[in-house]
Image (cartoon, rainbow, N blue to C red; front, side):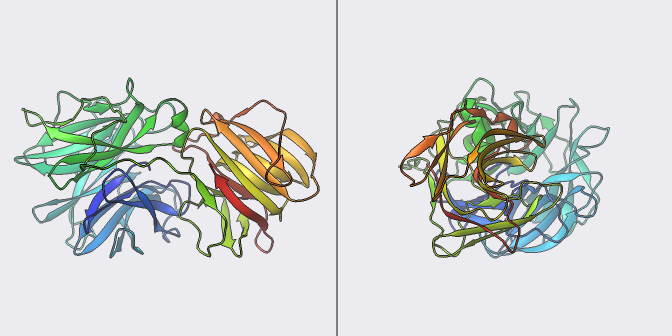
Length: 476
């Protein structure tokens, strides 16, 4: 869950995060203990009318007995990233979109809303695409949370030229604090870190902490971390949830939410318990809490409503997925140069796993399992033009790794993943006895996109009016 926003509502914690180029948009999770989380759904099942893509950094804020979501997306008309707002009666409820609220410069992203004793402010990252230093800016926000009431003013300037974003605000005692992320957010080269600044007024001027960065990756369990928000426990302890990339094979699970406890030091600066190195083992926020082990995923397609774990490639296909009587009927109309149809995927939950399905009807000329980066970077294992095929697509260039005649009978497909990104492929006619395709493991690390890792799942070029049919899907 990249760029997490964390709130407490009716005694329960809720978090929402970036969904980027996967639909539905902005996943929402709930927790009683800040450690174990349940996937509740999404802010939007469909794109708001003004948006195009790149659904980043939703910020949740409670106001007037409602929950507001201030979110970043590209505008349909010109592809520029701006900030919209939506509201709901609950964090996990149906959100009504109110459209654009921040339309500033060549880019406005990463909103945060702060209540300064009744005066609302909204801050965001500005000038990230301009030939000038990035700034964290803010403006006064109306009491209904739906419009700006001042021109933007500067809070922080990126004087080092390293990139700053993902800010949150809090006031403790006489000081206003900004916790923000610096450097590069995404991908295997990410060097994200957490910094702090403070002032005696929300308007500034802000002084950077002399100990910055106060939290970083590098030598610990993570190689980068940043962009988060703060929540409080029942005893007043402060917890900062941000995203982080784990080292090694676990990188391929993507940006993971992590929690570190915050305290004030003797000089009144925010510091993290345990020091400035992000680590995965933390003291639990509540006494007696135990972290549950990651579980696999299984869908027998018996339920009429799809599991919230399923996501699809909305920039490249208009996807239809219908469950009925233990079968999934999958199709999608492709666009934007997409030759490989609808991808219907889940998030990997471990660096070692297997995915499996029964393909009952191919529908189109391509159907089966996939590991999906985008429409030009994917692996397909299934039926291609009537033959059992293993296809690798890199930057739009297709390589046939393996191909044979389609076996008679029911076709079961499996892929086993190790080290996060290396896969071998198998098929079966009964779902019990598996034939291994004789080839070296495929290294799928090249499928990683700038801000997201590949996802395992199902794929088909069946267009609407025709469907691929699957009997089940498992990820163990």
